[in-house]
Length: 166
Image (cartoon, rainbow, N blue to C red; front, side, top):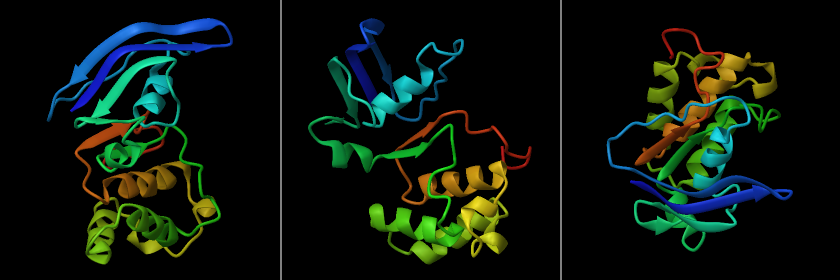
């Protein structure tokens, strides 16, 4: 469950959100729709604790993202709109890094299952900077799913993906 309560966010004297609230219940799917600059990515970054609001609260499965950030973030799998982080790592190094962060048990079986599903298991020994945009997106998606999060947050996840992977 994701709870946003009375969130206010401003940048440089300009208010982006003023007191927004919404709730995403377990097993519920929502989409944020709006024009460029409307605050969709900002909202997702706030939920993930990457940005901090001016006021209001964000809770993930009952854990406050500001006060109990680690517990809240353990319940999130996040796929950014830009899969260009960690470009110097090999695919397998990135997935092992994510497994370390989330203390994933049976990582090898989970990595194998996910990478076969997304048909990238044969390129994991290559650096991410050699991957196409879509292949990077697949690795980032595998990393987000590796710890089997309760909440999956996707920011334009289909960009660059082939139809089967989408």
